[in-house]
Figure 1: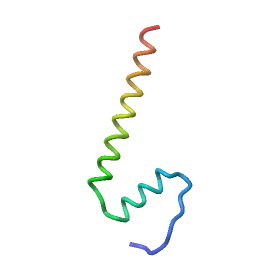
Figure 2 (figure 1 turned 135 degrees about the horizontal axis):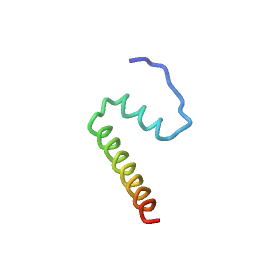
Figure 3 (figure 1 turned 135 degrees about the vertical axis):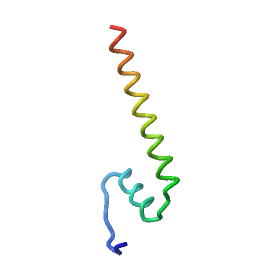
Length: 53
């Protein structure tokens, strides 16, 4: 792995970079699963609101 320090303007990108640097796959998996659950929830809410009109 490189010793180059990368600066990220997005806090989520910085968090992801830290997880990858620490090789913490379990926490990264938990973060990605939570993001997918949120995305599906939002999509479901959007779909439900469109079908009720």
